[in-house]
Amino acid sequence: MTKETWDSFLKVMNDDPNTDVIDLTKEKLSKIIADTNKDNAPADGWKKEDRLTNEEAAASLDLETSDFSDDGEDLEELKNIMEGN
Image 1 (tube, rainbow, N blue to C red):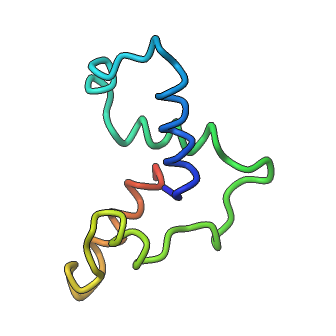
Image 2 (image 1 turned 135 degrees about the vertical axis):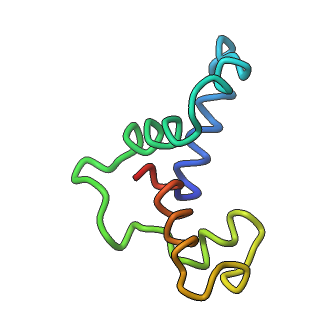
């Protein structure tokens, strides 16, 4: 999820007084992310260059790429989750 997508999500949450944070816990985080990404997708769709870099994905959790496995499989899984794939 890009910073812009996250900022958009937070804006929606802050702008809608009827949003109940407790209800959000009933929904899978991956579904919330997928819905947010879909709602904020560019008109011509997401491009490969829009994908999070390994460094951005790690930094989003206050980690570094060296905190992940050497083969990068867990980092790819994190990026897929964050991008709603």
